[in-house]
Length: 132
Image (tube, rainbow, N blue to C red):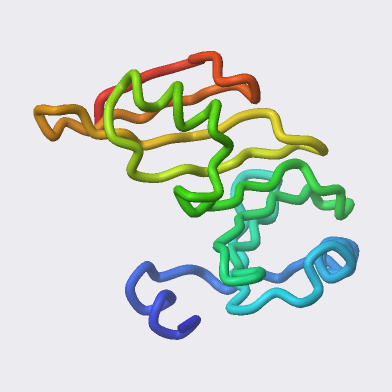
């Protein structure tokens, strides 16, 4: 998988600091298919844990900055599903955590099949909506 993605997207080889690797292993040790990227001053790991895709972002000292988890639609909290329904059919849900759940990134599709990106806070309040 790593070689295929590297060939398609031309990911440069990333050297991960030991503190970042140790922190990742401590938090997500049983992960599969780990891909590392360096963005600005952060290290991002894209991986699968319990069959769910995650993206974790660490600073160079190994501190976890945030975690994004691609939720199955059926695992989405009901109040988030209800808020999404007001905008269209729920297509994709990403839970964002920074120590605790702080929000959700959603993709919804309206009756005209136009897709929108929604950013909701943990209570379901709309923070941002944009057409895709």
